[in-house]
Length: 92
Image (cartoon, rainbow, N blue to C red):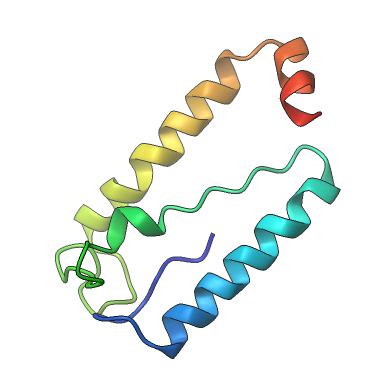
């Protein structure tokens, strides 16, 4: 999914969230596509994004890339460990 943007909640962040909702609703039609939304990894409880994750609140820092890589890596490992039968069952 698209990452959130802006230090605090704003219209552009809402637009990214709307695109993510649209993508999530359309992906089942594509078959074996998966949607990974990591927005919650970047937005803190007060709605702010840390400059340690996105130096300009849009582009990732090395810390931000590590934050993004963890759930992506977990998902890829899960996919690689599934048998073909499990993969087909999860798509039904």
